[in-house]
Image 1: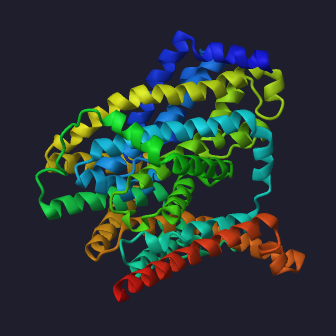
Image 2 (image 1 turned 90 degrees about the horizontal axis):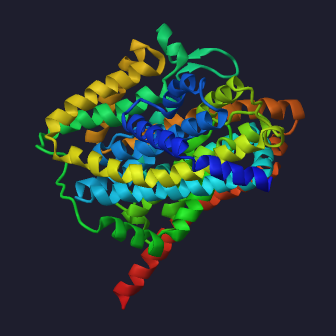
Image 3 (image 1 turned 45 degrees about the vertical axis):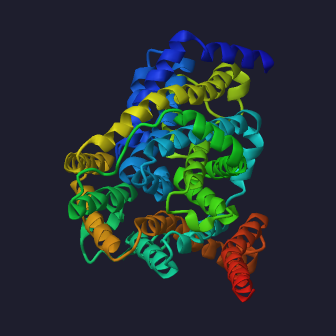
Length: 504
């Protein structure tokens, strides 16, 4: 194995492979930045180009594209409040307020460094703990997915600035939207009103583009601002960001990256769920939780380190068990099979050099992303010097293209427009889009898990045994209770301390 690792390191540092990874990273960052163009789409477009390449080189190119696309979603999330990918939704909560404060470049470089660290930590787990983590992923059944979704929903109350009721109502709207379409158990259609295209339900990415991108455009037009925000490049910023992260964010980076790694191994969860969970925990452990959502750099750190850690960890079930853990992993599985490589435990035995070249190459790709992302961030930040009416026009064009490109469906464009109008109206009423999108993301996971768990309970004859007695379910229930109780306790303690200070 040591010999395979050394050869893999040598292959990863091959100049041709470094050049290919650099170009793939640049393409991935660009695709991730544009709303609606997903990492899955970018990787799928590159698969045909790998036919004439060495297997290791082709996999390195696909892996670099994946890394770049997931990170790239942070750029548009921070600059124009529009997540380029679903996993960057949480980045908008603090990234865009930082932009409005004139700290856009600080947020961009923080997202870059956090993404690289999260990606490297996730890859370390991929290299040293693939088999045990893959076995953990097999322990997750429907009850565990249900409780994981409930745990994610505990963040709802904190996603609306200072108004818990509006956060819960927004989440309820998202959950309601998630129920449109076919019931996963009975097969009956719900809330379609006889309109056939709604049978397929509300597609996540067009809805997300609508609630964030199109709603933001309508807000820009309504506010009639000349520029999105004031922006001037600040010297010595990289040193400042690295100094801050090394001094204040070590625990947040490590905790969020590990959370992202463990969520990433679960098929169907992905970076969007990982970033919500990490953001929630960062806020819960913060000394200043009230600053989250108003421009706290720790929110960007948590979201970006978590969602980039899922890049490598989502490949763990694929490489260890032959089970793709995400849509991108499914595309990569096709790339492996094209070159005659069968994913699974035998991959490391029969093709150890290729496997370790790919794993080490992901670390190299993350390090290269520092360089590519640095110049990219400086370039993307110039968007703030463009008049807002030009930006609004460009965002509308990309929103339409991105929505249509998902399934080549005009109905997805209609979904985007309707959700955009709803998002604009709710923004005017003081509702943030984050809780709505969170409800939409986790609603389907929670419903599927709950419905299938009920069927399991009927078969076993024990609801308690199905929902509560399973070890992972019990642990997740405990986390849910702590997530609900701890903010109440902290608020009670804070009020008590303020009352004592006033009395003295």
